Amino acid sequence: MSFLFLAILCSSSIALIFKYSESRGLNRYAVTSVNYLAACLTSGLLIWNRGGLVSTKPAVGSSLEGIIETLMSGKPIEDPSSGLVWAVICGLAAGAIFFLAFVFYQKSVKEEGVGLSGAFAKLGILVPMALSLALWREYPTGLQWLGMAIAVFSIFLVNWPTRRNRWQGLRTSLILLFVFAGLAEFSNKVFQKYGIVDLKDAFLLTTFFVALLLSLMVTVRRRQVVTGKDWLTGLAVGIPNYFSSYFLILALEGIPAAVAFPVFGAGTILTINVGGALIFRETLRPKDIAVIVLVVLSLILVSI
Image (cartoon, rainbow, N blue to C red; front, side, top):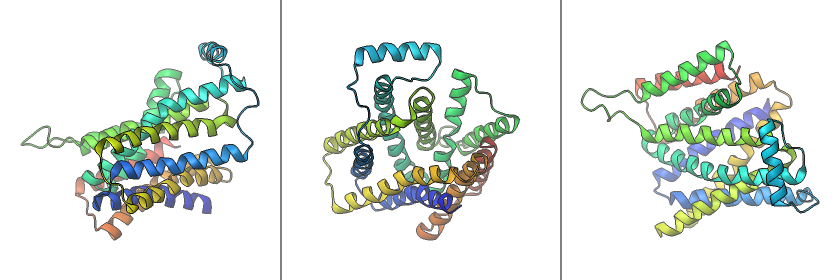
């Protein structure tokens, strides 16, 4: 249970650090760049420590043909060379998605507060569930259907229009955070469904490297000064960003997934809201509190 507690703390700290950086007016894209630089170095060190990826140099042409044939058959990839190419392909797409997810996480924290942003980031789990249903006919259970319905209702509730202006209630940063956080989770699932799990470091390295390049491009283009605080804040995000998944994997070795995932999701949302209230003096409207409660309930149901 200690590993699960550490995973919750790491996941919660990401949103709280974003709240600090946005409230202090730090360079948003510089913070994201340093975060992904730390992630790239960590992935690279893990690959180097394990002696590299595959012993033979992959032939891209033949590997692509093998990947296409494998995907058509619906079976996972077994050839290490093709598996490496697949990891890179998935990582290229995932990198852009991860970058956008982090940008809208920061933007949402600034505009909507850390509590709602943390809830909607976790709510993104609905996206891979819906896409898995459409693509692979992975049908949810009765309780999971109920959880998905509650989650959809919570999204409508938080964006409920006002009487004066029907578009005034639309909170686009929360919606985009939900979409891209969910697509980030789905990119992991796509790799795991068809790829070789032992090559996950190559997938993560490619993902973080592409996200780093995109973030650097935006940082340079905006021509904003990068300060020491930007560097330190980026490192402060990058460390828990990596270890939240690391500790969750360790927790799953001793705790059933049906217990670990609901506790992880609900615990993270609760910790973020408590931290937002105590550290940043955030207050929530009654409707926002109701939405967070519904999100926690939906996460518990869809994780069963």
